Image (cartoon, rainbow, N blue to C red; front, side, top):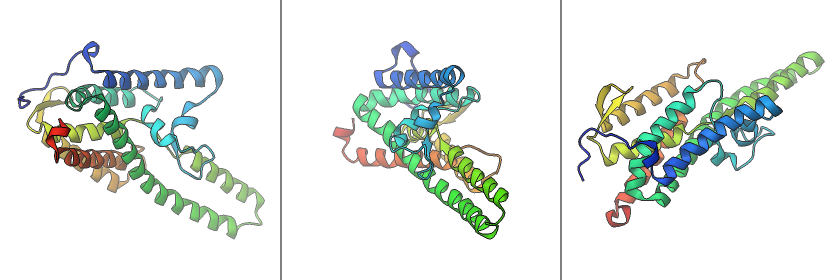
Length: 245
């Protein structure tokens, strides 16, 4: 099969089952998060988003469920993630089959979570250490100590990761390795080969993560983690092409 030409994905109705259901589940969870918060005051992100382990909201299942949750302060987050799953997921599912594709999707999401967790741990522990030093230093100032304790609780509560971006970067990495010369359209009109798109996005995410802009709330190291796990899985599976295909 020759995939060196321009890649044109199928319409939604012709998507393979796992890719289609991933998109449907993400959209349903996005809508449910908005509706439950408005109608019942229930924030699904507290239960399904990935929290830091010291936060009272943390549960182990969040390492998987966070992949199907998205920021509801706008539609951009889920829109671009689902466009990516739609574009790359269907081709990879057709190549691997539904079982291996689902394993890949969840594994890259888990890898993304672990990568971001490492960064989150060092950032939060550094801040917590400073807060604890302040509490110990001004322990006789009840009001100030109460403020610091409240700030620590908010820090732990707000340290949460959501989104399919890690899995999406895994899909992108796999697509770039399997179909490196396929022409894709960056922002829908800039033609670029898949391999250069993967390298470019990977470099951008690494640079953005190292720069650590205070106003940047994107989990760049989660993207890198998903990309690396995706590449590793493809390399492992390609060792036995009979099983791989």
